[in-house]
Image (cartoon, rainbow, N blue to C red; front, side):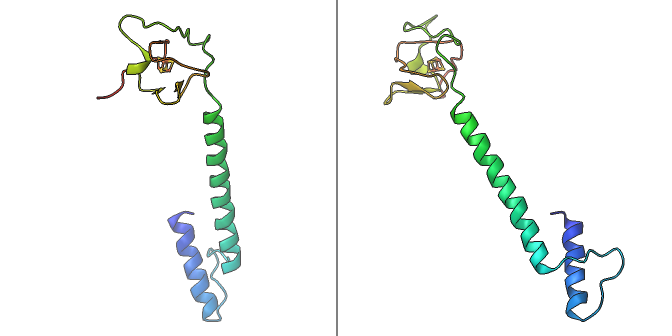
Length: 112
Ligand code: SF4
């Protein structure tokens, strides 16, 4: 909700509390309408975040797509990659079992 809309709502509520009709140009929102509108906006944001989260979790690449191999390449190995999950023998972005000696084109040096 914009600052301007919030200000109009406050003015509208103050005028209503005084028993006055809101001035022209001032939004005539009731507290109930305001709360419903905020709930709808927040619900939409939550749904969008949930959808994005699910999509990113399901977006692992297939090993063939990233030319995964079980041998290091040029001194680079999964063990030194930021995406490697050693305990799970897995990768955050590539599907399937991943070995520490492996490598793929998505390799990114792990920060020290
Ligand atoms: S090199 Fe590729 S498969 Fe290995 S951990 Fe990094 S991103 Fe995953």
